[in-house]
Every structure is written in structure tokens, then in C-alpha cells.
Image 1 (cartoon, rainbow, N blue to C red):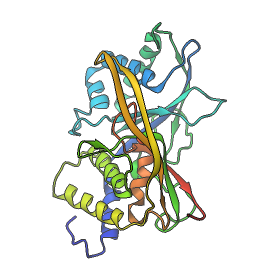
Image 2 (cartoon, rainbow, N blue to C red; image 1 turned 120 degrees about the vertical axis):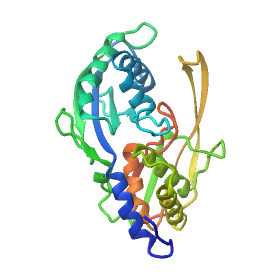
Image 3 (tube, one colour; image 1 turned 90 degrees about the vertical axis):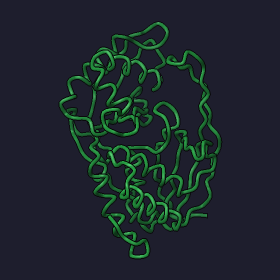
Image 4 (cartoon, rainbow, N blue to C red; image 1 turned 135 degrees about the vertical axis):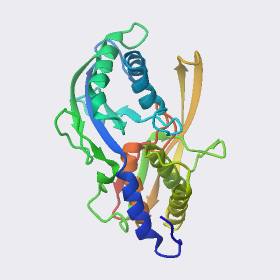
Length: 299
């Protein structure tokens, strides 16, 4: 992976990035729920599933919720997020697992069965999964059995070439990026790319080495030379009860967007992959789910 940045960094970066993305296996499902007596939130569902999985298989819980078995600096290997709003299927959530072995399939669904019996809310109201469906890399439905793909399979979601077509990167779900121990309230494009690469490198098990340093340096170089309009957005904070800490915790994030008037350039695979891996901090709030929007013109 050694090369000089002056010698066509784009082509080498894209090749090595695709190899890295190809090492991250994804299994994703849409879970359609029935919660008749509770206004279920994603953090609420995450909490009860975590407790159930910890009871069923502590080692698998550590691997998925903490990442301790994958040398990933404690990066969780899952994302639980609200499914796209649809009155015909709500409530529904997306469950995304990264580099989890297929042999864990039965254990995972056993933990969900236990979670549904344990119940939600103060009164521990039971819920059930009406059905589950697998999601493919293009976000379409494909049966309900274990269906693996990699982040290198994720294509640009817009019909036009990603390298040169204007687009908007939008964060309607709060984003938390920390830089020098402070929340970034107006992140730059290079901040988004750096955060995306770090998450993906950790999921891939790429430790801080010469290869890591070269790739992230190139990512920063390419993103800093990609024209981007300033961030437009606002603060979005949340106060939630932490069962682990037994106190209210205030979380800080931002929502907003960045316009790329001349396209995403060579870093577009990172942006595409982040539709699934996200790029913010946390697993309940501030995960940074990205939407890639088409734009025929920019102001």
C-alpha cells in the first residue's frame, strides 16, 4: 500500500479501499414489530435485546455489543435503527450486524424471542416480531434467511456517476463527531470522511499501522481537495435515562447537510458504505445515518 500521494493517489486509494470494504461482512434485517401497549423507541428495544443476548450467550454479547472479540477497540458490531417511515409496516426497525458468523444465527433469534417476553417500558409489556426480512446491499428485500454481503457490494444510490455529479449529504438522524474532545457542531467534509474511514477500519480489524496511516492520510488529502459547501444545520440534544449509570444523561449532536457541487470524488465508496456503517459516535443517539441526495443544481 506504499505510494507517494503525488503519484495518482485516487486509483491506488480506491483499490485498497475496496479491498478493505470487502473484508466487512454485513447481515441486515428489517424487523416488523407488534407493540400494542407500549410506544416503543429504538433505545428501549436495544436495551431489552442487549439484556436478553447477554443472558443467552455472554461471549456473543461481548462480540456484538462491545466488540471485544474482534480487536476493534470496543467498537460495537451492530446497528439498530428505525426503519424508513411507513404507516403500513410501522413499527419496524433495521438490525445490521458486521462480521458476525452465520453459526450465531439461531442464538441471535433466540435472544430476540427472550427479549419479546421480557417486555418493554416500566410495565415490561411483551412485544413480538411479526416477521423479519433480509436486506440486500441496495436496501431491497430478499427473503428472511441469513444473507451475507460485504460493504464493497454497496453501490452509489444515485443514477449518475458519483465522482463528478453534484449531491447533498444529509443527516436527519443526529450526528456526533468528537474532535479534540469537543463536539463538532459544523463538521467539514474531511471530518465526515475521516470518521467514516475510522469506523470502517475498526470494523475490518485494521489496527493503527503503516497501512492504516497511509490510507487515512490519503482519505484526508482527497476529501480536503474535494469542493464542499459549508455545513448547514442545527443542534439536536437528547436527555435519556441510563440504566447502567442510574441517572439522566444528556447527549449532544447535530443535524444538517453538506453539498458537494462537483461530486464526491475518489472517496465516494466511503460515503456509500456509511449508509450502513454510519459514522457517528454511539449506538443509541448520534450514530450519523447518512442520506445521499441527488441535486440537479446547487446554489
